[in-house]
Image 1 (cartoon, rainbow, N blue to C red):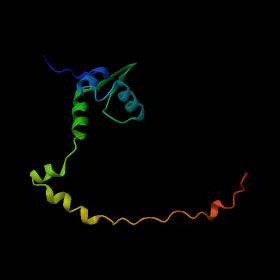
Image 2 (cartoon, helix red, strand yellow; image 1 turned 90 degrees about the horizontal axis):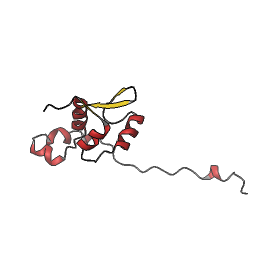
Image 3 (cartoon, rainbow, N blue to C red; image 1 turned 180 degrees about the vertical axis):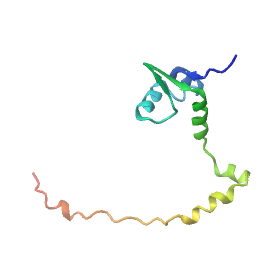
Length: 102
């Protein structure tokens, strides 16, 4: 049996083992985030190729994985460009003192 080209929101939820509900998919569509979708009339379908690409983009790479793959030096070079943390002063409260108290 061949894999379908498009999946319904219910099928997408099943594909991700219920981790993404149909309600979440609806919210993501409204906010224009999440996987790409196609709307035909009232029907919503998700192209399988776009789902695969979106799922691959969600992969989290750990530092240990990068060290094992020999990519340790790529990320360590960017850490030298960091600015040290400097706490900010809180805003002055003098501007709030002029308001009348009821």
